[in-house]
Length: 412
Image (tube, rainbow, N blue to C red; front, side, top):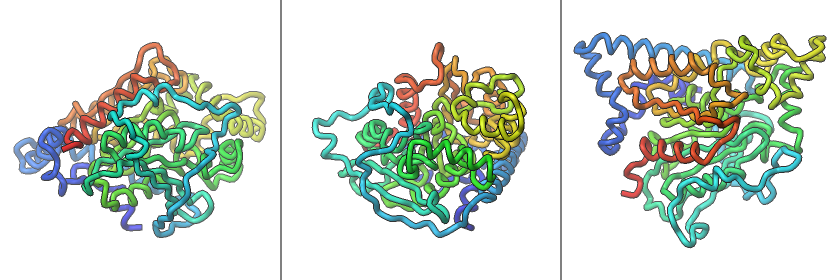
């Protein structure tokens, strides 16, 4: 569909240039690559221009190949359709003992209102992203009722494995109190898109057996591209100020969605970015496999193996998320986010996202941002002595990053 391709393959140097006049000066400085590209294109800095063009071509190539894979297992593309839905009273979390509180999310900075709940406006929607039951994307949007009828910055929040969009409500309300339009979705086979507590597990196994869906990361990325179609048309959202973040699986969704679609202008994956191929090659795949072990057990049995080994792991990744440990791995996909502001937050002791495996992706990403002339737009923070856990410190770092690049004038 032309409307999708025009955004997904749009060169980042051209993204949202029509809006720069409305952006405060301090935000325009964060996008200094735009002006430097124009100067370079006139011949003053030909070396810099060539470096930028090289980075742009690499990102365009990645997006074209990735979009081709996303389209390869669609049940049928349909026009984007929006329906109003009812609030979910009993959200489904696919865990034996679902948690009821997150200290990290509760710590998110928020404006002080004695009656905040009364000031918030909530919308529940279903977007049609493709044919079939899983093509119905549940969306929760929270904003302030008194938005002064002006376009606001927006942020998409993505939940972790087995959770749902309602779990993210503390973050949505905190950001909404500060003037953001806060959005959350149910990823594939989660929340409203799940029938029971084994729906996601069953979908992963089905993907291995049938090879017709990509429930691990990629199918939800397709939804996020379609979500961007919708958000950029809303009257209350500035289409050039849409951020995206998520925790764990949600961090992976945020990372790949931003790599695929330049309309996500500020990006903060939390405990999600990893190098899948490095983990296989260096025998550090066990913790990631353990998080969705049933599909690997099923593959082990079908492949006639006595135990799950790296050959099983490689075959599963190639089946349920083609290219995940090769041409779409972090060493290629993370640099494709440049030059948009990108903050990576990880635990330094996270066994699911081994920090040693990020040396090459981080180095290549730094190089990409240097080519665009905006190294300050990329930052990597591995929090010491933290495993696979989103912390209050990470929540604060993410909040500061979004405030810095999206809305320094949000209350003006």
